Length: 306
Image (cartoon, rainbow, N blue to C red; front, side):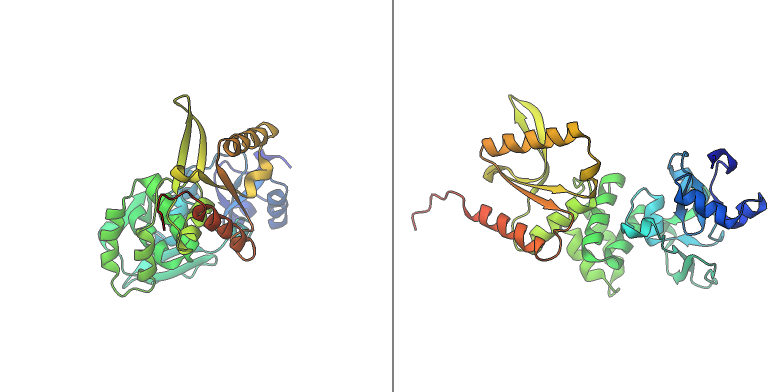
């Protein structure tokens, strides 16, 4: 099934029908990888690059001109993906809202609500109204589950250069709002150096266990040259925490060999390496690696006499 049969921009099933392309044919093309779903009911050719312009074009097909994209959909527009792994196959409704006094959308596939937004909370991205990165980060800090919320804050800080001061100042407007206590707690530990959501999860689990905060993205220098980068580390104690996630099996043999050489070098030079894998955020995996880390932190030299 050739990709050129489909338009070079996002389209809906209704758009496809106007071109004489049936629903079943579109679904088959999506299954075969010729098309990809970018939003519920919106498709795009797989050979087209994923850009902000394309995302905006896709969203404009399912929201009205007076709606404002919010929450996870707004994050997606801003380049921050907070959808769960399974939701990339079965996409959730688009998050949007109408301002107070306007009718919320009732379109299929759109979770339309009403919300109080100040003028400074909304920006226009290629003609589409979206909550700003700051407002979106604050909303997600309240709405998402704790691990995903801190990952979202980390990503917004890294990609949009938000600071803890900006987030804390913005949170003062959320007085008595549901989720604001979680938001304040997570702002205090958010860190833009995290490079993936699961690194953020790992750091949060360490903090929630009452252990000291490790340093993200620590470089080890050999002869003055930055050579090995660690996801999380306690440099003075020579403890490294590494996350091997869903993408581990996609690494090339050369990348895997480099990882093995790096970890062997670390062990030979007195480092303790603790590996966290995809299933290690619930018991018993979580208990295992947190216990390993606790023991490693405890087994350090002290000059105290008693």
